[in-house]
Image (cartoon, rainbow, N blue to C red; front, side, top):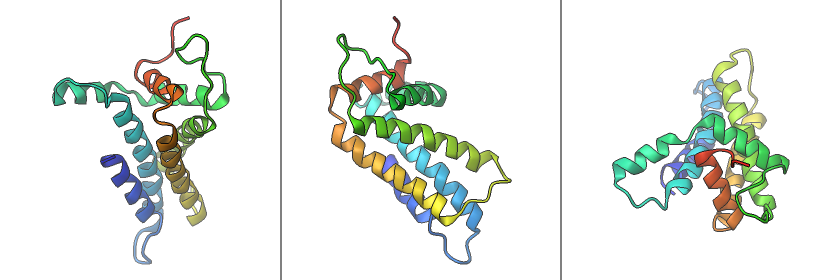
Length: 162
């Protein structure tokens, strides 16, 4: 999966800092990196079918917006997502988990990056990295499911018009 897997590996490494490492800085980077690992996994998956030039593919990747991805993911995780098919297709539990993890990791990343008053514990950080790892596993289980493809479409273009 490329950069997404590399970022997940880095997040795991950062969640286990050496005694001489700046612990809180490593913890904060671990959480942010775990979020970006999942972000890049979903971005890669969303644009994988694009057959245009590499420059155009990069442009398509850049159209994905964190806020839209958060909003779609929150809706999917809460079970109120409508998808694109008519009739509606069932949403696998694994997809709801991926969506919830994306939403939760984005919230954690905002705290890690902007809330300097927060002190992160080893358990806090390792739990969040583990959630990202589970989301990767869940995504790989359902990535070819119709609901997963519709989720990716929603991440790209936003909410379906009614």
